[in-house]
Image (cartoon, rainbow, N blue to C red; front, side, top):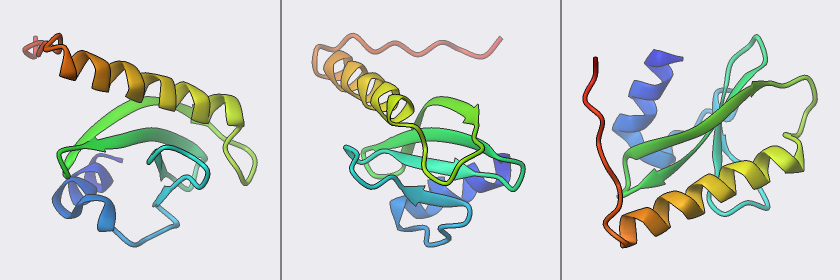
Length: 94
């Protein structure tokens, strides 16, 4: 997953391997990273190549549940609102 994050961060949302990364249709620019073991990591982009990951799950079906898409969209809305209001903070690594 780490290598995949690096590749997508370098190429942005133009990365074209839908077996590993894709835009979720019927969403507000929400994407998902996919692994063969069923791990799904939802994310969106800020300023082109900054990947904001919202949450992940182990998925067993073809389409992600609507409730999970809604959760990712809610986090995106909260992030963008905080950014506009100047309320984003950066926590240094420990």
